[in-house]
Amino acid sequence: MNLSFWERNQWFDNLDAIIIGSGIVGLSTAIHILESNPHHKVLILEKGILPQGGSTKNAGFACFGSLSELIHDLDSHSPAEVIDMVRLRWEGLNSMRTLLGDEQMGYECHGGYELFLEQDLTLFNNCLGHLENINKLLLSVFNAPAFVEQDTPFDFGNVHHHCFFNPFEGQIDTGKMMDALIKKAVGLGAHILTGMNVNKTSTDGKVYLQNDFEIQGKKIIVATNGFANQLLNVSVEPARAQVLITHKIENLAIKGTFHMDEGYYYFRNINDRILFGGGRQLDLKGETTSEFGLNTLIQENLSKLLKSVILPQTPFEIDDSWSGIMGVGNQKTPLIKTFSDQLYCGVRLGGMGVAIGNLVGKKLAEKINL
Image 1 (cartoon, rainbow, N blue to C red):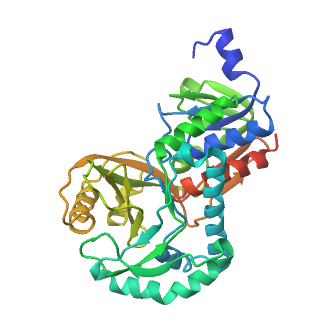
Image 2: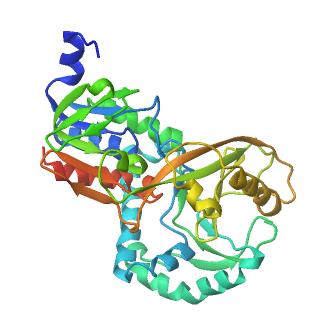
């Protein structure tokens, strides 16, 4: 790179922290570093023109897991681990709201519903059988029942007449939230450079970009989530998620966040539209990829469910479709790891970046101890 004295001096020299990834975790880490150390020099490197991955591409769910998801989690996690996961997500959501303010992130709380297709009677009955136990487990988190059985609202089609509702789940405007995070980080003094494709990192505080351009920092933080295994030896796999959104629908009555099939499907209202995502279970191998793109099988399935279940009596048109990349692993807890005194990571958010990203950033800022 052909850099002038001014460019090196302003952006690349004497860096206290280099953060790779300008998503929720990367921006939150910068914010928490600079709130404690306002004179530190923090550089955030982003390979895209906007944050890649899932931070600006998610569905905007301020959630902590549906009833069937949490029951499934108990197959691979202890009850104490599940409680800790939910507490982390709930505290994380509230910390993000405190950091930015509800208006700045477009936060609304209409509650969350778990619906069951008519053929999913076995899953519904399993949830009903575990309802009391799950509520007891989570009582210390919410100080009230997390889930209640109720009549299914909004005239959905081909679903069971009962569903499970939780009053604590909300929704955000993902664009507003990310814009507010960027403005806060920059306002505190962080520098964000886009189009910076990092090739590798080292344990002695070096970051190598295109053409082996080298940057030195006192601390390096990898916050690339689904892309983490491209830079570090970590147990994180990319997981692509498919999303679509309708054109505006006149007199749309549906309001809230909705889950189906152990959380593999999810939809919500946004500005008189329906945003619908999921279906990864239809092609897990194909969706274990770090490449953005649309999966025809999944997109067709989403369109079919949109017509038969979500809007059976309402004409609609699909406005747009896109994909995002999450980071998952064999554990649902985030991976916050120290590789050396100069190299760290905060990744594997398991599709819960909105909920836990800010707290992961805070933990990273505390861990690097600048």
